Length: 545
Image 1 (cartoon, helix red, strand yellow):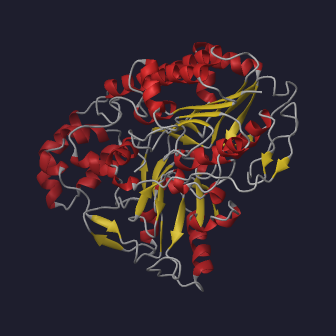
Image 2 (cartoon, rainbow, N blue to C red; image 1 turned 45 degrees about the horizontal axis):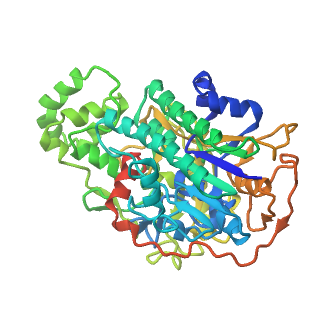
């Protein structure tokens, strides 16, 4: 039985429910199928989550924990690519069995690998990354009458109207390209991914914007399903959810510095998130204007600069205060040039510190362990004691409102057990109810109130078609379960290397587990993507740096 997987980044049931009447195609799919919350992996971010979906294994089995891989320390980083994902993907197993596959726009699939079918890379790939077979992007461009692109027009523009229109245009292009591939090429499995259902929440606050993107996604679903026969199985899924965050931005390394785990260096503030440094040194904002009154902050900025300087108040302190009252964008637009061009100067000395959070999205603490890190400052005999100290410290941290910051703080072994455990943070944590964000920056304070949209742990799973059992009452699923479910829908044995499982009675058949032996995958070595400034700019644009 043919199977289509429609992957929408950050698609969330709360918005599928809210916009139900405006989403006839997705609503009809939900009505005739089964659905369940889909728990993402730890951490619940695109860079590690989509590889978990397509390999059927968690990060400790495929080796990717975020958008970056580190040679040793956080300042020695590279953007992740398919070369870093050290497990076969669904399409690799199927190709070994002679099954024909279409893979379109799935994140972390560059450089493309040779498969039995078509593979067009997605997020994090350079825009000019070729597809497989070579020339397929040119063929697709000719078929849809415009250049097929991985990213949208005005992707990183500060003009929010242009940026949004680019999102809509890209989803429409993806819709037409998907229909073209499905109608003109042979396939047993087709995976089509859309990224902008995530990006819209990172840049906009108005629900009308969210609805419009969801409607564009719904049109894609409708046209894709209209282009195939009714007996095709359909899986709709997301890598994580998204929703409002009303707690705090937690500066974990400030907490560690206060407790003597962090050493600093004066090097121009390189540990500060680039998106924040850009805000301090740019005259244009990146967040939708909420329409609040800016007069008071303007007067304070224009008249109080000299006094602030005499008092030793740094620009980062002023910016943080503006964020606290929701006027960060106003500050950026109104600050005098001399103020904007000054940025925080203090950074983390990674090599001299005892422990640190390398990236907020990593959701964990790395210990600078001697014998593992080149400049390790914590001896192996101290390792467990330091972990105990850090777990105790972070477990008791409370917000200024007296609420616990983290839902859990634990050893990495409590979450992971795979062969790439060593690449994980030594200590893992999760913000309480995912209602706080985490930053690795030295910001001069531990907590800053936030009101934004950000990732949630539970995404979306919907399954419909003759391969699903209509009688199943489906409980929560794991993101790693999606790949075994797909293999089952295609009447293929589930690879023993997949750590995800197939819920009993979900499908009309119950496939066995099998060892597929040696599977060729990820055979191309990526060129150094660290040199691709556009990739970094896109990550900055979404606030991931």
